[in-house]
Image (cartoon, rainbow, N blue to C red; front, side):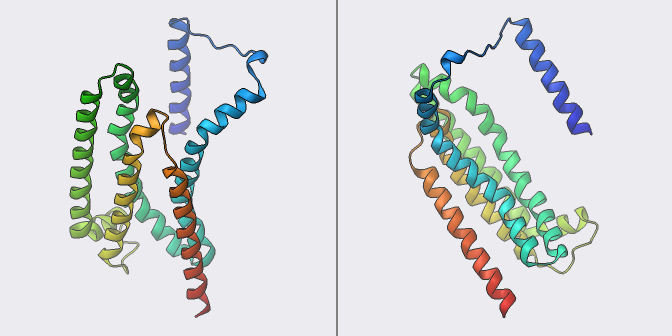
Length: 215
């Protein structure tokens, strides 16, 4: 319920700002052309590849766990992801979102040197956060997790939390490499390659789960 109220308030506030600044959107049928739609779709295709990869990385593992294993395993993986995966992704996305407004602006003004300095600072901050996160996860990951879940999961080793943290580290570093190209709409085929790797990874995971059940 609080989330819904927050979304409603954001919508009302946005509409108020647009109305106050006399910003109005109108729909014109003459702008809806097949050639234009195709052009936009082809330009945005690399973003769609990335979106599919994000969906698979967010929900894919939970779906597989639910298909092949018990509810306890699903609950454990979900809880571990919430604390050791989604938390650090959201934390590292804060400076990235801020940069999403600044990168096109600096590029438009041809302030390339300033843009490089900001991106280098962003990388250093991200690396610092990740290193601290990995150290904390390895040293006291099990204690933090068991405290957070009131000791409901006590049969798992600390290395699992570290492996989850290591996986999310790779994910964050890869996502940061896409930051510049994504906000300038100049992505290469790297997003398609990422999607292929993600699909292959999940095929291997499913194969391993089937093999585990049959043994």
